[in-house]
Length: 167
Image (cartoon, rainbow, N blue to C red; front, side):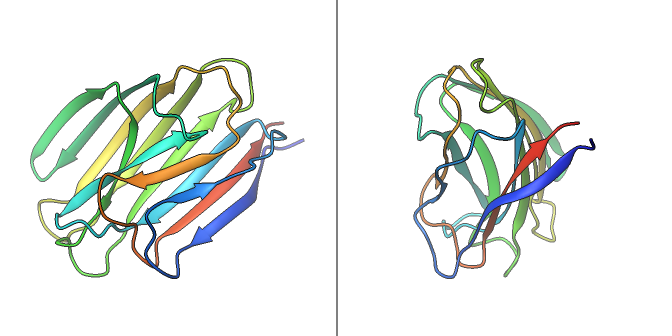
């Protein structure tokens, strides 16, 4: 049997939203893949969305490597797992793209995530990043909540959740 990828749910925003959530994620797959194309309303070039499995707000560890323009850096966080997206002062009508891979999301071990981000701004302030996160919880992931640091997720942003079944 080959590895398969099946769309579980999608949410393409027809209006601005304070958050986006996938609920009732079935435990029938091996891994999850979430693909997000988003833009935020905050008055900046980009900002971030928190990624909260099961709406959790604790027990996170996250390391991200990123570059924007000629600056490369690495940052560690212990409060949330993040993804970035273009915001109000970025090039008009551009959206960032993020992929979030969560292996063994329904297992009884801590949950790891890998995150890849690219934002667009047609200038030296565009951003690309790769991160690895850990949610120290043995609970199966049954929901994923995406909440901006401030402002809203803008209309036209899309969130696709896929279930991965391995051979």
